Image (cartoon, rainbow, N blue to C red):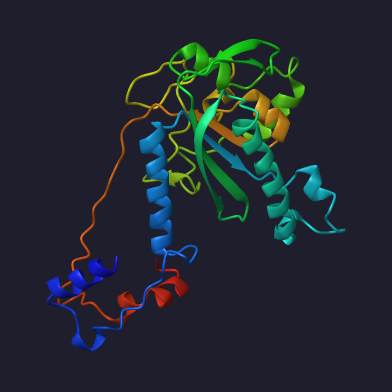
Length: 295
């Protein structure tokens, strides 16, 4: 990285000489810095290179209505008033989920995993988990519907249907799960007439909701899976894919997706440093940029 800085100075004619030798940067040991994030990204890519592509992408979001949170609130307090309680409870729940996935082998033997934690704009903690399963592992699991299933590398539509659901469950058969799915696993209103919805970009939902109905699950090599969404319930078009057992156990938004998409979209931008956009002290001082939230 230091050599890159020297190369940059030597190759540009637009460097103001008074700033040469005064570049201020944050090392990778500073959490949240550009080099820290770059290092974590390289670590994650090393895991993928060593163990093959992920099989499952799981997103867990804190539920502010968890009883463990509400019972600790004082009178007239709301969960937003106690972010300390929210993050403590979320950390405990997330550790339980990681143990289920890694130690208890809920989806089969996991040979590698990577996860990151972020905070939504409304302040709730959220974890994104990538799970890589063992190619040769076959494990019997007592599943939510009291069925024994064989879990291994996910390659067939039957395996997908055993793991992921994208429909409203029967209220009479699974009343608890029905309540959780309808309250935590439904995408909000968007589309024509909802232009102010936060997910709307250029007149379309950035999450591609509402989805199309499908009477069966469809898997293709280089596209996202199309999950079974029967037409018998209109709300199925807005259900976020979930796992029945995990949703029932943790009572929060847990999105479970099968990793089948093998493409990526990369954008390369030119900084266009010229006489109208010269290098100056602002973009030579990463500490000031971080304080201004510009990096």
